[in-house]
Amino acid sequence: MKFNVYITRKIPDEGVKLIKDIAEIRVWEGQLPPPKDVLLKEIKDADGLLALLTDKIDSEVIEAGERLKVISNYAVGYDNIDIGAATQKGVMVTNTPGVLTETTADLAFALMMACARRIVEADKFVRTGRWKTWEPMLLLGRDIYGSTLGLAGAGRIGTAVARRAAGFGMKILYYNQSRNEKIEKELGAELVSFDRLLEQSDFISIHLPLTHETKHLFNKSAFEKMKHGSILINTARGAIVEESALYEALKAGKLAAAGLDVMDPEPPFTDNPLLKLDNVVLAPHIGSASIATRTRMAVMAAENLVAALKGKIPPNLVNR
Ligand code: DGY
Image (cartoon, rainbow, N blue to C red; front, side, top):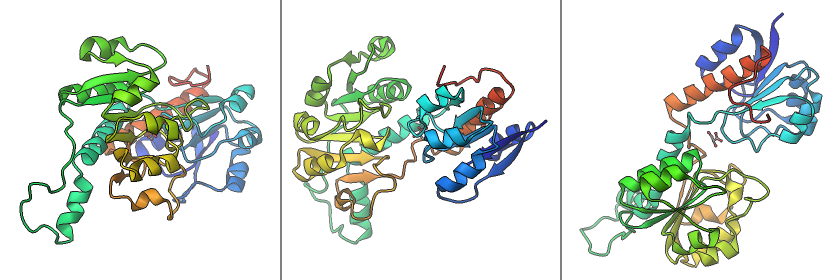
């Protein structure tokens, strides 16, 4: 007997092929996430669900899955899924860690450099015909070399960012639940309190999961403690930063710039004041968006799903 699998968006074929061998697949063809009523209908007879981080898989959806065995998330983060409800119902939840680490670290670093050297502003400056001559004071930015990087979170992605930072001659501080001996030994990174991270970093890059504890961790009081003229990079989850407080800090010049690949909500409302600031560099949640990485994520999500359907423990089970 073949299983039923619902996939909430088109993903690279390499992943779909693996599922096809053992399951009948239905795919939501829309660009936006399937509406809740569609999800509730489709999940009814699905044995497996392959979901994206934009799909809210709450307890109602999970309960509606009468035969649901596995939710395979096409992402490393899984804050879109009610893990408690899944666990209670005996539904396995999986994610795609590891494969997107370096790609996401690249983007964090790209945003850091773009903010430090005002690349987006400079690009606009040239395109709009404002470049008249070489000027001693034109578009002055901040040095990365020799400055201090503060990592909020030093897991896989934070570690990969630390390695890049060491190559740029940065001093590395990190705030993490546990000690990361690797970056301490190899890169001379130092574990610090959250306040010290805020007070001493020239750049802060966020690599934390979104949880009750990390929601709005970067709020008014955190921005007040940050170094004057420092730069914030977020490639993790938008809600870790309180955007209204970030706007005030940027507008007041407390922060020199921010590079955001993630926002809250996504996409931002068109009247979000951050969109008006020149010292904000934005990207539409593309941290893992390289061809190779998105393909590997599809394969990994499919392998997790197939393993669970076959009654095995999937390699990346989140709710053990
Ligand atoms: C993730 O995987 O959680 C990223 O945000 C998108 O790849």
